[in-house]
Image 1 (cartoon, one colour):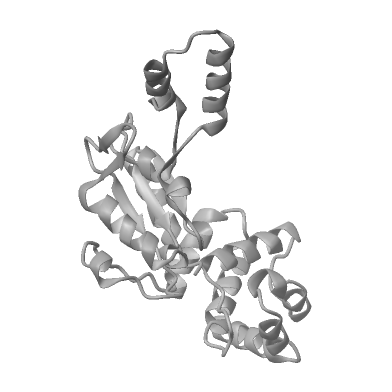
Image 2: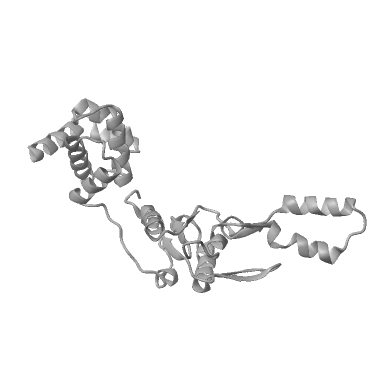
Length: 256
């Protein structure tokens, strides 16, 4: 988590000039939230208005109620529609948070890039979207889905790459501070922590330090801002009591 998997989809969409559609996965995600649902409130209002108007043509009313006018498109259905710059980029983020039933449904959708809506028929993508699926490995993704993907492991960047990222995202940060921040984060990732900080935490920490007008790291500043870098109390406690200072001394000696 936090190494930049989601950013891949964002940069891909920006680079290609295409729209980005994001489906954030979570436990209990279903078709209504991921694909489509009907605007029941609008349908009920249409029924009431038709009844108030007198004679009702039931067949005509039914065809109107289940038309695209009352169809609410969720991310997967939106991704099947053409965009101005071409097919969109579809980000299915943190797929491992869903259950296996939804993963099986997703496999069916992505195999043919079509969705069947009983009341409307089958909606097919004229051009398949570019799909990015991410996982943090809280559970293993089924092999059937993996076989249909190009697999890429996104690891923590090395110090040089992380410094480039920091310079790009936070150019106003003093150069010395940026180098110390990256070196400290690289060192702290080697510690026995429950959750090592990702690139996102590096950027957040550097931003906080810039807001505090820091130009270099010191032990007090590091201890006071550890909550930006580490998100578990046990990890923060492990870095206190002199360990953070020891790592900072190592960083300074390496730089010096």
